[in-house]
Image (cartoon, rainbow, N blue to C red):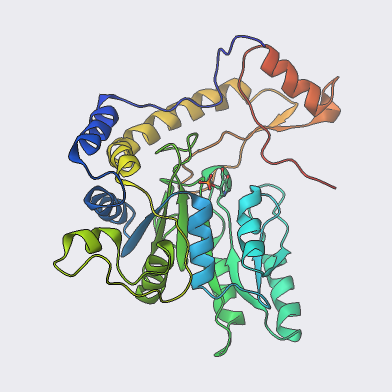
Length: 340
Ligand SMILES: Cc1ncc(COP(=O)(O)O)c(C=O)c1O
């Protein structure tokens, strides 16, 4: 294995994160508690959302959001085939069908025209679609205005269509209309180890809808009608709670929220530095005829710098090109491999 000279990603963890974790360890309260409540509040303020719910991954946040939006057996979601497996798998776990709307050639974003084709057919076939799940791939935003309009146009009084943004790649993508993840009914962020801010594993769900927030809060912790923090800090006995429905175990512990709070303070600085590197990459690659530079829409937060290889202009295939880069110690990945 070649020495890694340019890693695919290296998290920036300082003394602030380390000290914050130590403080939690010394406090005697490791699981979800007041540090997580603070993290949620700070995240909600940052992106301008009414509610923010900390979860242990984007994947679990997506399951919560879909469940709250009525994704279940007999229903369907529309999403993009150009995404990580979890986006569609969450709908499958809930027993729903997944309809794939293809992407636009140049933006790599889900195509509103393709979404509408599916919605038209679905309206003729009895309205199974309850959610559209756009993914802001690499940090570059989908056309949220058109997607929200389509959800409204094809909703019926009996079957409301929600927009759930997979914002795993898009913190902090900021547009004149607000942050990615706050432009639909729910937004799901990821704090996985390679993301623009990280807690190792983790995520956040944002929404302005009180009913969705309430449902997701209950389902995040076993379907209990009380949070752990409330059970151990309020005068009411900790064992007194009701189970409203069998729920999940998707909460983020204070140990990880402590890291998230420090990372959040640095998010603007990380974003600024990332954009300097994007300029350098653009300069370096702009005259290479065998690559397309990445799409760059409003507010792109550049989680990934996507170079599209044109194999017909190379004397090797894509996989050989990728493995030669790795041999040179340059960390790359393929987002995402198509299976035929
Ligand atoms: C587009 C997309 N959605 C969702 C996820 C899942 O995120 P997590 O690992 O936090 O569950 C990923 C993971 O990288 C992703 O790339």
